[in-house]
Length: 255
Image (cartoon, rainbow, N blue to C red):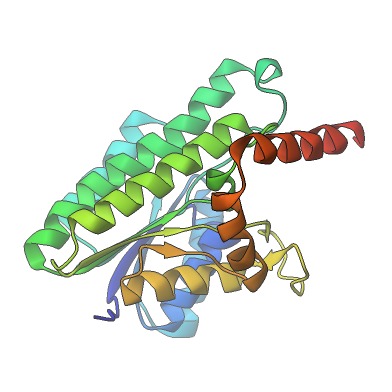
């Protein structure tokens, strides 16, 4: 059953793929709650979307790694339910694991995993009670392979994929869709034309929204990444580790 969503909450909406989610949803007539740390950028985006698309846009400035501010978003989801939750907020600390400050790694886990789980837990019971809704969790192709140079980031995205697929199975047949969006390399700050490696952020956001509306468990944007995914699952892990390790050392050596 394909769903059209009348209301949505989007995290990380002030830029990148999150901004694309907000724009596409507004263009489809969806009223929005947009969440990010930067209130000024959210306010500017809200004014533009209201004027252009005549939808309601609520701004909720919050740092989702801060328990108090994250709690406000959780309470908003419980008190005034939305039909679609887009867990897009996330970031990666890149470099050798032993050389990156531990606090950076833990903040990454807090945002990419803990905040996503908490917001999903705040939104999902109401959706199940109404028999309607969707949760779109932004993961990554890096969740399918070892990720030297971004070990914590890759591990958080592997969690998001597994978590989303499990919830998808749990809620099957209950009118609620849970989807993991797994993009490859995506241009988050400019929408230049796609090439063999890089995807456009609008294309990624649209693929995720179409997938959750259709009730698919996974969305992999881009024909190049759709072709790569089976290989990542079939290649023996020692060979895969050796290949990505070689790529990591080559990239590190070129800096």
